Image (cartoon, rainbow, N blue to C red; front, side, top):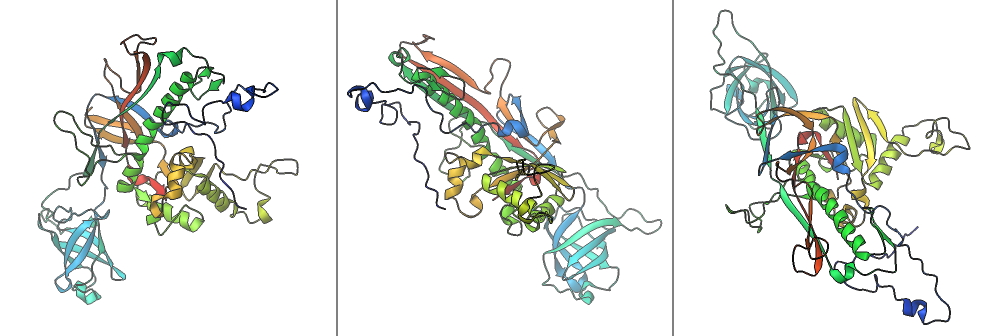
Length: 477
């Protein structure tokens, strides 16, 4: 069945009389014989139009009095690297990168006396490190079961192997041969707030003029004054911008033509939003065994395998669009082996007089709990829903998995470890000024701050998003 999209009125981009917002009483009825029945109440045909509320569900908001926020995240505890054969007959191996794919050659933590497992070439070999000089990426590993790695069938061309330190072996009465200690590794991240602004202006004459149609809006504004609705819609739209910018923003790249800030503060640098952080530091389902949107258990289990490699956080929240939500429902419903057509699952104790519940709000798979929720931002045609319809490949975002709970990180501004939600917004504020959500009125209407015959509503916010532990997040694309 084909569905033809409906054509509906839209908010005008400028304040002007158009055919969409002007009620032509003369042509519609005043010039006719009978008085028309005027329906004065504006119809709310789009339901709730705002999309904000996502970050308030999964994160928190904190103030800061600085130009940037810096935080550190723990590294992995155990030593594991990617390596390649240097000389298999001489048992020499080159360290290439750490297990997460980051180049780490001469600063690895493998020491003399360490016991290691080397996996690759279709086998696993246990050995002991006999040479590991500081500042050198080449180490020597003597296999326990062979005279040389070449005797086990390894050649110099064998690469992209994995080596894991699992212990150490030392001789009686022997001094410690390691020669150096391993220090805890951590990664430092930083983000800067951006300044968001918007404005609404109405002339003094329009403020004093009553309209024919009673208006209403998300902020509770109602009455026969159009400027009330326009100001309220501007405020609601700006509230959405404060959240959308934390989701979609990116930092300015060096190749960008956007001018970076100078010493005087002129210019913009962007900020790292949620999607950008997960793309650069987290996971994307399109890159996990070709997973699309967790539409069957095999694809979903591939996602769980990625979580196992990282924090393995037990509880996770899924915020998805409608298509993905239905796909997950179908996946869970297909697990029922008793009901032909799915009629035995749904509301508890189903009978012919009870409604059938065809949706799932949560489920458990392996050691993980998932709670599923629709995300209006991904469905609305005027927001990400329209972008996803035009995007292709991995750029169409169908949902996101976010770990529940809090993480422990070191805040360099405060100088101590803090427990915070994995997502939280930092906004600029001090005892004198709060820029979380600032509004003020200028003009000659009401405030009387200037000789301008108008009322100007100003909106401002300065904020950024902190995404901690992005390796536990996954975009469904």
